[in-house]
Structure formats: structure tokens, C-alpha cells
Image (cartoon, rainbow, N blue to C red; front, side, top):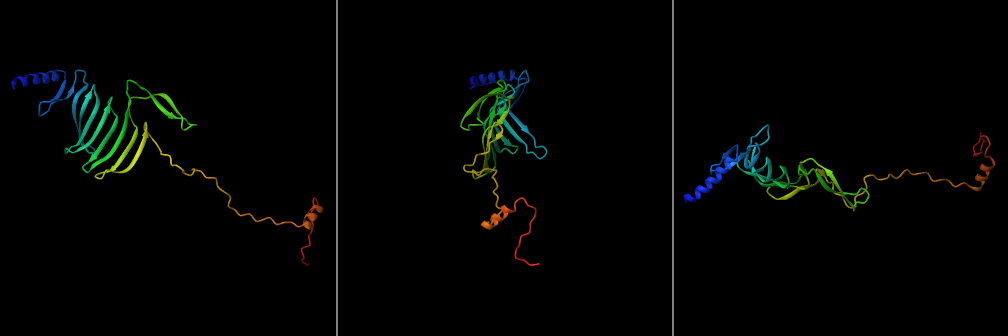
Length: 223
């Protein structure tokens, strides 16, 4: 068995030699390695203490050149599993899930942008023809954007409470088929008094007296 221990010990010592600072686990594994350029490398375990009402937690995963990479697992300070996050280029990327003791609470969808390639190609709907897509090249800073469907669950039942859809940090409002237009033209509901039909005699009288000053009309009254 001694011939097995020697190679393992050699690998461990080589790993430590590449680290400026590091920690050893109870099983002798090297974690929290900082290389000679002070960049985080390899497996890390980080503890965040509770502060100003925010609950603390622990997270563990892989650093590559000072950036989080791949899957990171989150635990409460009591040791309960509370989340699984995915990273690329140090930013959240893909599906991230968060849990309570009762079960899955929410599911987030992210898209990371490569900071070394700030130009990105996106598809944009044409403002005139909604069925036409225009491909545009835009510049972005390296970051993570909400992108895709976010799902919120009732813990313990896996029943959806609500969903949200994002397109590069913009909340997408779904179209409702057959919805009435937001602005509806108002109709005039005021009833107009019906026009009275004029007799032949009235028309002739008005024609005969048109252009004259006020005249008196006999209406059958006396005095």
C-alpha cells in the first residue's frame, strides 16, 4: 500500500507548490488555492456570514483564473442544500435553481457574455413586419443577463406560481390573442331631437320673407 501513497503525496505536494496560499480539508485535499499571481484557482469553499438581516451561506465550486466556472453548490450555514448555480467566464450562465427546506422555490435562466469578445449577434424583430427578423451586431460589456424563462414554484408541491420571460434583461410581455385595442374610439351617445318636417306653406313663407328684418308671425294668440 505504501507504493500507492507516495504518488498521491507527490501530486498533492506539486499542487501545493503551485499555490501561494491554500487550505487543506480533513481528508488532505487542497482547496482555496491562490496562485503566484494572486488569482484563485481550482476548488474553493467560501463562507458568507449573515449580515444586516441577510442569511449567510456557504458556496463551493471551481475557480479558473480568478473566475467562477461550471457548477457551484450553495448551502445554508446549517448545512442544508439551497442552490445550484452555473457559471461561465465568472458570470451566471444557463439554469440556476434555488431551494428551501420544502423543495424547489425558483428556477432562473441566465446568459453570460464573454468579456474578451464584447461583440454579440442578436436577432431583433422588424418594427414593420413582425414576422421578419433582423440580425444585428451589438457591443456588450462582459456580464450576465436574464435570458429565458424564470419559473417560481410553491415549495413542496412543484406547482408553478408564475413565470416570467426575459430577453437580455428585458421582461417580455406576452401578446394576448384577440385582445381589444387599448384605445377605443368613443361614440356619441347624445340623442338629438328629430327634425320637424316643414310644410309647403312654411317653406314658401320663409322664402318670401328671407332677407327681411324680424317679422311678426300670427300664432293664434290674441292681444
